[in-house]
Length: 323
Image (cartoon, rainbow, N blue to C red):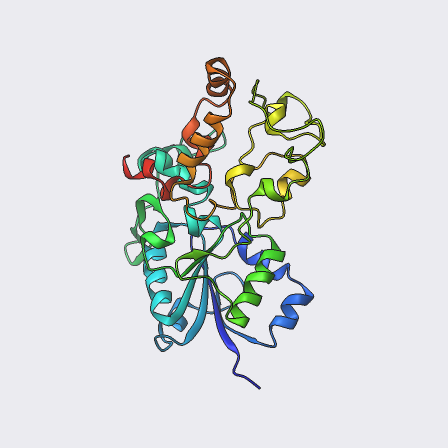
């Protein structure tokens, strides 16, 4: 029997949803485990400690899946440790790959975020203005520490070298299965690539107007939000006025949001070759608006366009570098 592929999972600043996508493989995961040896899965699934990873020989792990964005000095340290221990590193999910929704925190400095989280919310009772500190002495003898909060959110490849990327929030379990199959077979794209089917959400969307009788594409003539009504399930969302990022987003999800009548918001990541997802989204959507009046309506409906177009991708884009 061939030697099993040693696999590690490391969660940084995320919700563990990406790792749940692995569990969602169900029976397929059981079959894959015949060929995989999970040697590290923390802090989500196994009672192992970070020093267990640090004690491994460099290069011991064949493939490491790292999910979550980078915001703490702890994340930076563990990402570097895993990079040394793993022959191949995959940025697993949109947070590791592009920054994720938490990346919008980079629009504010950390003092503003702490004020909001620990003082200025209706349910917060903090009259002494106590905020988390990296170091604290309790009762004069207990020296406690917390990870240091970095100034900005960063993507995994801004900390370490990344070999492959997988999008999604979380990645669709069927695509995770395909990615695991590609790993086991060695049928992988060039290093630095996204592991993807290469199709946009529009390419797999049953509403795509291309080629339909009496159909075809036309300019967007109005802007709607999902609170403005229920979209017609047989008509392209964009052509109903609901802004959808399907044209510029990888469709490895199988169109999960579209299938439940919700516009794509871009968690799948950019199509291959696109370096700045938010800039591409802005350009693509802007090019299909009917006129300046519709563009004004877009800005009225979505007053913070940075958060709208960079919902999942702010730390990876040019905008973040200029802030």
